[in-house]
Image (cartoon, rainbow, N blue to C red; front, side, top):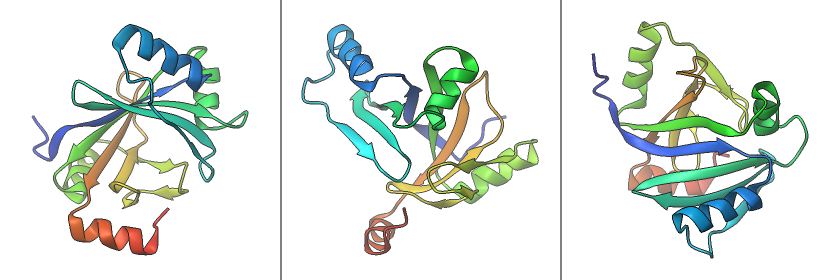
Amino acid sequence: MDNPQVLSIKHMAFAVRDVEKALEAYRRFLGVPADTEIREYPRSRNKVALFTLGGIEYQLCQSMDEGGRFDEWIKQRGHEGLHHICYEVRDLDKALEHALANGAQLRICKACGVYGKHPHPEGFIAFLDNDAAGVEIEFMQVYTEAELEEYKRVQGI
């Protein structure tokens, strides 16, 4: 049964050892723009290259510290790869209700230290503790204009 709350893929995040090297491969093989920025996120201690291919945002994510979120994931699996898919949902509460009713559990957001629904820069998010084929699941309800303004005012993360 389809979850009517799922609208689309918001982004796909890949755990990488070296974000510059990974980005260079995407530039050469897929034509990602040369001016793609690599951002450092001091709170979550990650370096991330963000770009769009085929209408989907890609995130190449490198931990800045040994034992960080993506470093640990790579060590557990022995390779780099698809870490999580973020699904944009119509109503996060209803999407979580559906997932939880079907055996899902919530995972902590390592950047925020919060379980369940909470504000993030682009919308309200939550992670499931249940992988699908080894890939984490994130849900995001993108902010309305008013919610985005409120988020900017209080800086939720």
